[in-house]
Length: 175
Image (cartoon, rainbow, N blue to C red; front, side, top):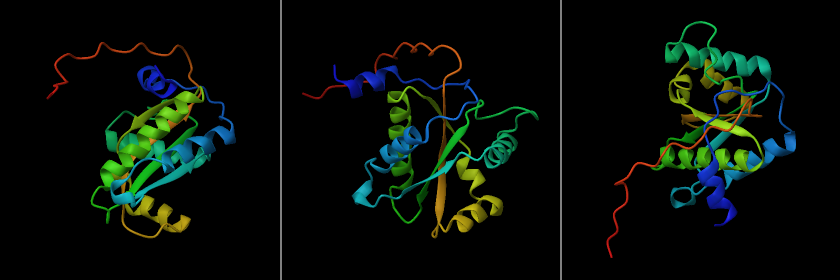
């Protein structure tokens, strides 16, 4: 079995991260992997905001917590020091799919580099608010974007979770 398929089978969502910041070179490779995700008609509708600033990360976590309805003090990013926010240009018909592929590539890249990751939702709701639209504007991102998800990344604190058994009856062959 080749390395990519092995990584696909081994990668798991991580829910406990160490506070140490991963190497910038590793983060850059994860971003690059996301940028090489397939996209509908080659439009490359996905966009990545790499958040390594702790204050912005914590503010984002708080906004996400409130949208999710969790109690004060809960960290929906499980302590991950890096948050890659994936958004996609709404003008592309396939923008949600394109952004989802960016997320998948980034999570596989993180795993291949010995880092953990998890997809956290609610980016759509965050980036419908004026506060987070302003962040896009401040960064110079022009256009109408939909938040697809957050790829929380960091060093795993603990053991890699075991894979759940695969559900039967999900493949049908037409030969």
